[in-house]
Length: 224
Image (cartoon, helix red, strand yellow):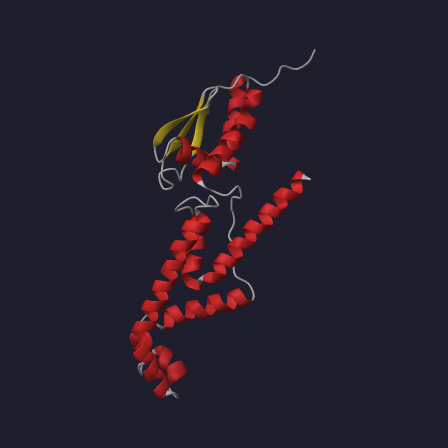
């Protein structure tokens, strides 16, 4: 006599656990596309219940019901239908089918640029760093008073220009990379990419694009 199959409650719990542990990006897209939530409002999406006709998804203490239409006829249809809903949401939202789930730290030339930019932020954060008596001046500029005076003169313009450029780059990263590739707004990963971009600028774009390229290539190779 064969063993009884899993109960409906067990099947539902497997689906819920699977979606919450590995497909939060899909849950976020469901809320954004089918419930018309903003990225910020949908950022903490969690599946709490599922039936043949819909899903209960919570985010920030609120419950949203996402309809499954037409309703499922059996739990065997769940995976295929949820995948289709994800694809429809991805297309409807103008997002990529590649989700970025990692941060890649700078190496080589990128690490050099990161270090130089960070050191520049620290050095030019205060104009007083370029006058006699400051630690930076006494360590590096004491023998070059004319150079120290020049750095003192350009400090306000340089730091304002640098911050303005990097704020633009951070905004561009958020709009054209993080949003498009399903990095949840204000998540730990989102903040790490944003901070990295604010410090180093363009290098973060290159590494992000490398991750997207490698992920897409791996997905395509699995199809063959």
